[in-house]
Image 1 (cartoon, one colour):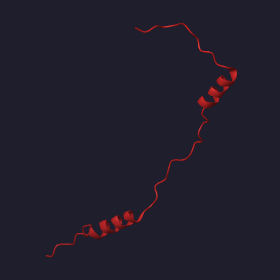
Image 2 (cartoon, one colour; image 1 turned 180 degrees about the vertical axis):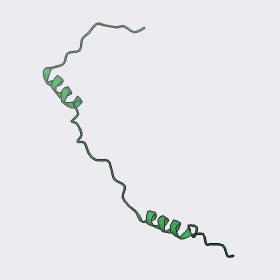
Image 3 (spheres, rainbow, N blue to C red; image 1 turned 180 degrees about the horizontal axis):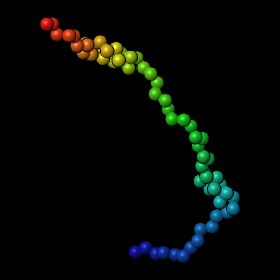
Image 4 (cartoon, helix red, strand yellow; image 1 turned 90 degrees about the vertical axis):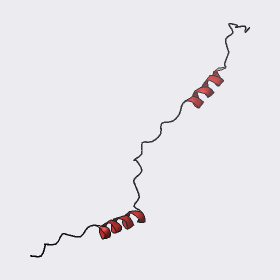
Amino acid sequence: MSVHTLARTVAAPADVELLGTLVAEPESAITDPPLPAPNAAGAVLLAALLLLSAPDPKEPRK
């Protein structure tokens, strides 16, 4: 069985001020989102797709 007491914790004003500085977080600066960096894999994939794409249709012979 637990016993509950009506005790109140006492904090010195210096402790309250220290706690306030620990709790308050500075706001972060707003920055732009990261931009995608081009890489060689994209260029190779584009070249492969262009080389392997279907050729233009030719006129049928009569």
